Image 1 (cartoon, helix red, strand yellow):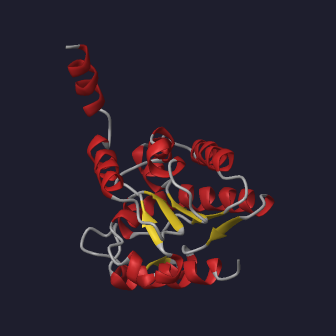
Image 2 (tube, rainbow, N blue to C red; image 1 turned 90 degrees about the vertical axis):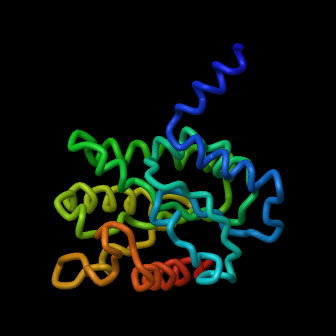
Length: 209
């Protein structure tokens, strides 16, 4: 009975099903040749052509849609600590900003630093890449907080060893506004053209290792 209750409670946690899906995949076989771990939220989750777009970096996608930095921290044992990658690429923080007007840039930045510290404790020497928050039509009213978060995280990354900031914000703007042609109908998630920009910028940065 106690086990049932414990499991029942666990199933109420956010993203329980996503994490169980990762565990099931790993129980069958963790890809032996992966080199690059992608973690974060839905902009990675929905990147269905990731393996084809960046084959030379042998990506393993452990992002889960809708997640915040706090969620990635909560499930760190399942999404990055159990693996042994050569590098980690992060896209997360956008949902933190969108979750509430009370989530300030400082809160987002502090959460990022906690996540970063957890990664560094496990992997002290690997390269870590943070993909900047993206500009999208749906959340354009939040642009000031997103731009400020990008600025703070970029500044932090520059001060750390083997830590890199990938600026995709500027690449997705035209006339200082998001390029709507890069997004699907929800004006939040990207289409093939959007991911082509990400592929180019990520490849360019990792290629400098």
